Every structure is written in structure tokens, then in C-alpha cells.
Length: 413
Image (cartoon, rainbow, N blue to C red; front, side, top):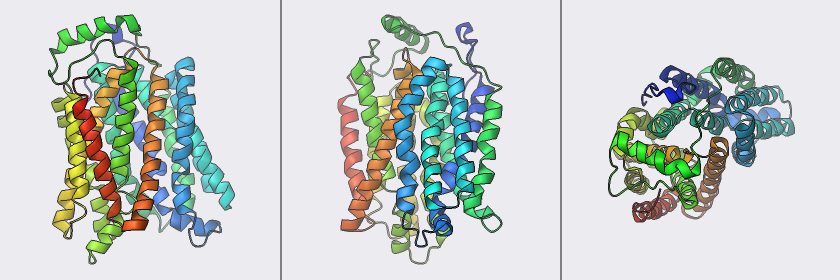
């Protein structure tokens, strides 16, 4: 995971130091456990609520995502108005309430309502990013956003394992009650952190800010020139890249286990799970080095990331051995790392002078829409061409996005 350097400028005395940024990342990590670890066990939870065949598992899996997408822009605007810290605490407490309701639910409608509330009241990722963007900027912010993605990847790998380990003693359904302690603990820790105040750079002053940044860090790669004016189109382009990246990477997830079992009949669930987790492990190992390599040229790095994602996805189709699968997943993980880090750098640039809550709330909505579209596309592709078909669709999307990133390298960021 990347290291966030301590702040040193006097103008950012009200911001966050390295220790505080890592505390925020730890809070996001522990609060993500139930949200990421329990959905894979819906097929075991739903029979206890009357859905004996687990028929509604697929729909309920995306319910929190859909309602997070709907609620994120509103919560972001409220954060800009009432304070990023308050709304981050609200998100953590909202998760705790929804987990308690889910764990106590004794019927399918009650459980569904709890998942709806999880989406509406949660949104910890965008709230965390908005909180950080209110205290940090430039390189410090992009490093912090990279660290948050590391927290998400670590939780995605560790949470299902922990839930499975607890299952013999605590039913996955009732684990929601236990997991509610985690966001409550995170809220208690976050409450001790400051309400961040960052001097706002007015739109007319962005040119001066960019000039100062250039003087401090040196000129950027000529292929990726900075544009102090930061036109509105650059933000729309960031959202387009976000949607395409989430779509291209998520589309391989739903049917990966089926594909592994089909291609590697002797492989057990542990092997399939490790192959699923491998790209996220690559991110945890490589994110810090990638950030140092692409910080001055994020568009070029993003194009490379999309290209590597395309190579990794297309490699799933002919993979028929454990070694080939592992190499394919590792390449996909490297592409994910370049993509996520470069998007963090571009988001940090776009956040300068903007209301962070609104921007990151909208980005969260775009991201969730990309994930939802990927799920639907994966289901359609799998139905017509089998479990290998979704990765072909993702390859086409990644190649198109890589071309767009190359074509816009010389355009304003």
C-alpha cells in the first residue's frame, strides 16, 4: 500500500497529517467488512428468510449499490454545506443501523429494506474521499485516494475469508449484527479527527495554483500538459473514464468462479478464490510504485492501464491451466493498479477549487452505474456465449477507453 507523506505547508495546518490519513483509511477498511464480506453468502442467508432456492440473491446483491448511486450526490451536496466530517460520521452510523436491521430481519421484505437503507445511508467511500479532499490537494490527495483504494482492495480480499471462518459458529445472517460494531468503532475514531478546512482556490485563481504547482514539482510530461483553466469538459471526461474502467474490470467478476471450475475441474474453491483475489493483491503490492511513476503523466498511465486490462481480460478466453490463469489475473491486476491510481491523480487535479462532496458524490454515482451496467452486460453475455463471453465484452470496452485516453492526452485535463 502507498505511503502518504505528512503535510508541511503552513496553509494546511488545519488539514490532516500522515497518521490521521492512515486512521481514515483504517476506518474505511473496517467499515467495509460487512458490506464486502457478507453479500457472497446471500445464497446461504436467503433460505433462512423464506427464499429456499436463493432466487433473489442476484438482485439483492446489487440493491445497496443501486441505492448508493441514487443517494451519493445528495449526501455530497449536504457535506459541502454542513461539513465533510459530519457527513462521514453519518455514513458510518448509517451503515451500523442498516447492519443491525439486516441482522435482526426475520423476513425477506425486512432484509431487503435493510439493504436499501445500507445503500441510502451508507456511501462511506465517497464520504471518505470528500473528507480527504477537503483537507488535502495535489499529490497528497492523490496518494490518499490511492491509499483508500488499497483499503477497499484489502477488505475485498480479507472480508469473505473472515466471514467464512466465522460461519461454523455464527450464521452469516446474524453476522450482520456482529459486523455493526465495526462502523460504530470507525465512527468513534473519526470523531476524534478534525473537521478539515482547506483554503478554497477560486476558479480565477486556478491558473496561479497550477503555476505554483509546476514551479514546485517541475514541468509535466509534454504528452500530458496541465491546463490551469480546468474546463468543465475535463470533469465529464474523468467521469467517462471512471464508468469505462469500472465496467471493463467488474464485468469479469460475476462468472469468474464458474469459468475457473469449467477450465480447471480439479481446482477447489480455495484456488478459485485466490484467482479471484489476485488482481486486488497486485494492487496492494504495486500501487505505491505506480503512483510515483504516473503522477506526472496520468493520461498516459491511464491508457496503459486500459490496455493492460484488455490484455488481461482477453487472456481469460484461452486460459486452460492454473499458470495461465494466474498470469492472466496478474496482468489484469496490473492494469487495475494503473487505472485506479491514474484516476486518483486525475480526480485530485479535478478537485482543486471544487466542492469536494458534490464532485466525489457524483463520481460515486458514475462508478456504481458502471458496476451495474457491467453486471447486466455480464449476464447477457454469459447467457448467449457462456462464462468466457463477458471478458470479451470487457476487452472491447477497455480497448475503446484506451484509445480515448491516448487521443485526449494532449487535451486539457
